Length: 186
Image (cartoon, rainbow, N blue to C red; front, side, top):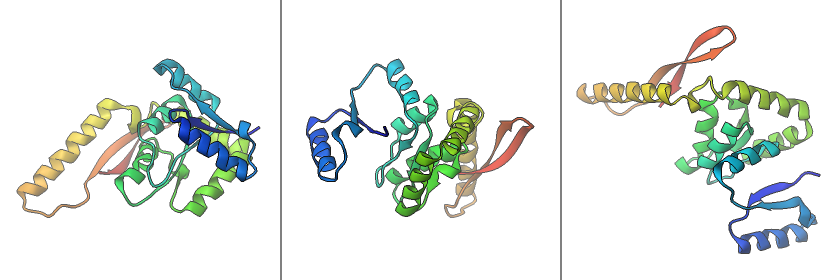
């Protein structure tokens, strides 16, 4: 049985969601509310889920990063504000752009596609696993180098009296065939 797994940190919200779900014909046991756990158990629990459904207009930030670290694919819809683009940044940094949508319709269609196509979802999990330690997201030293490079470019632009603009930093990813450079927009 497919379930919606939610954080159990607000009893009023949980009761309201159960009531609303029941009014829409959704069985109560399909809403699972999970208590907070110590970090190791919290991260291990992500392995029990199939897909993280990000929210709009306020994306998950640390929670999304935790899910990706644990190997749980994340589906997001990019919004206009910073708070609605955090997961897009995370997915870009871990080279999973296929999980980024631009409209609610795209988001819902991809969520249904992934829920009904286990082979595609499994392929995404495998890609996430192989990207986890070979892409920018969880490589702190490489991230710091790229941040320093971006700051140096901004400093140079400032001293040349140039207006603010996009900054591109070349970064490397590693795959079975070796290193490959890609532009990173800061």
